[in-house]
Image (cartoon, rainbow, N blue to C red; front, side, top):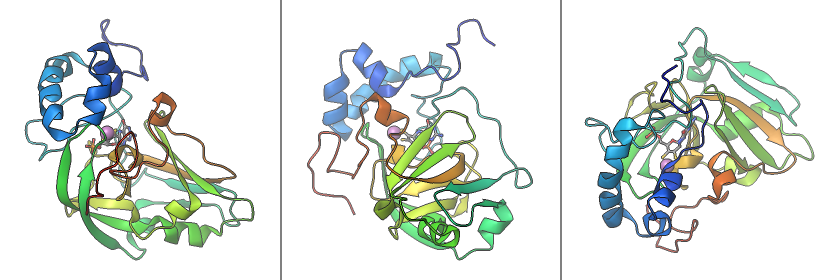
Length: 240
Ligand SMILES: Nc1nc2c(c(=O)[nH]1)N[C@H]1C(S)=C(S)[C@@H](COP(=O)(O)O)O[C@H]1N2
Ligand SMILES: [Mo]
């Protein structure tokens, strides 16, 4: 390990960096214009940030690469598994081929990161989370869904009602191509109506729980109910 690198899992996030720069509240609240300025301030840090959290990649198509850990080991179609367990009647372990064999749904929606960057009209395609929950059979007492990732650190949650929405996918494709490793492939969550931190990359586990357990960024102050334009201190018109 590089001597200068912080330990794996060190919670250095954009908000933490913004806080260090004294820009926290402004950076979070002011939206895209200020965010451009903030991004350029941060790009110097990004170059030295081994977490890659702040990297604005040159050919990213507007996306920024995020990982709360250091590099994440890739999973192939052969070694990828998605487990569904917790308060369900039929726990399951899906291969990528299993997921590909299920009905696929394509939705086109804006991607919106809570730090301000947005990628309009991005297609995502995959299995409805609702279908996986239906297949598992949610038991009495299950009221939320908790997600874990094969980076070993990131977590997210939704209420059961949110998880059953039509626009929440276990995504196998993004921009009409298989989800790349950097974007959290082979399988990531896509929660279209919420800020992009809900869309856990490198998804490996779905567990039905009795109550919402806050996720990685939510433990640092972001809202659990992360509706775009209606959370995290904003009250904008919702985006399409
Ligand atoms: N496992 C994992 N999922 C994650 C994150 C992360 O750091 N680790 N970051 C989240 C945040 S804050 C954003 S904006 C998006 C970024 O996705 P991208 O790297 O494909 O642009 O992933 C979300 N899902
Ligand atoms: Mo984000």
